[in-house]
Length: 465
Ligand SMILES: [Zn+2]
Image (cartoon, protein in one colour):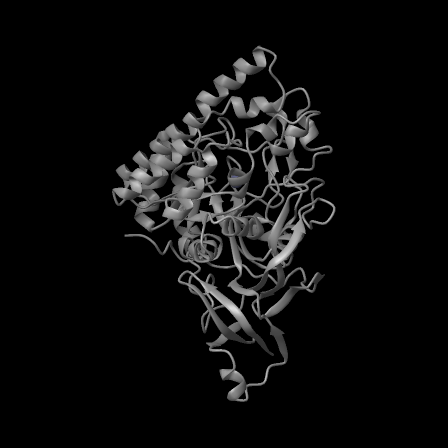
């Protein structure tokens, strides 16, 4: 089965070139100047004319939470619905977080996540491991995780009593990571201090969603980010800061990178486009925007765009963790601490970052890099993923940069009853999406199937010095 995508503007980290892309089976067979394949009488079973369109490597969302347990409920997208929505938005790989419950082993956790995902995914998927119980046994198991293709471990400086790890526990896990080549991904907010601010707010009767933002100030993200960087330096561990939202945290990352430390960071579209003002929306609507770290004041946004340009922020992921407004977010009416933390986003990452291209914030090359190529390298999937080159998986997006669309819960494919970007009109749209050579989405029609997506055994981070 051969597919030819001809005359497209093929994008990579070095820019754009008009080319034909030939797919044979599940992989890319050739990338040539337009017409060369026709001259050679290469016949394809299916052809797409991509003239005037971009052809880009399929998106990699390195931060999703499908059917994740949180506060007595589960995030609303299953692996089936979440990966379908991802495909609609041009994301052909997700890396989801397996969550170790305290007292369970890492390997039984991994088994449980395989059970949730296997046979259900529309696109390929990998896992990170959330380590919430640091002890001799789990430290030992980190080696087995790496061998099983799970080479990154997330820890939390937030959520005391749930996922929180002490500095000592973080130090132990980082020492192990340094030893085995694993990467520590960090949720960097000072949860101990935040809990005090939360207690003060509740004691003073401040219980509305906006208080979620007030009680998690950006300084406490900056402080935790600096502390994580210091612990990583002491142990020699690579460090990946997840969902960086604050200028203070960005400064800390930039400084560490300038000094040559293996420190990396991602941000998310919600921090580039939304702000703490959204948390203040009336009639409890602010609950739709409760995620951690919280949405920040708008003045952080230009700093984050600059970070994307300078590579101090090298990845854009979504932290997709949808909870329906009705029945789920509503659990926190009258007490913002009971609002499940998380926002939907897996479907719109590529489109929202394309707005950054339209607005002149980032280049086309940077768009592709942040959404696909860098996450592939960061998490050991390159060059199988993240690039359009012979031998790579044929995960491809034909993107119409001129199409207009309005984001709405009425039309999105995520299993959640609201959109954080409701009514936002944007330029650009994924027209056709291929996952390992199979057409998953084409001009408004879904052709994918649950179970097409395969588990990806990942190598180590490919950026380490
Ligand atoms: Zn997350």
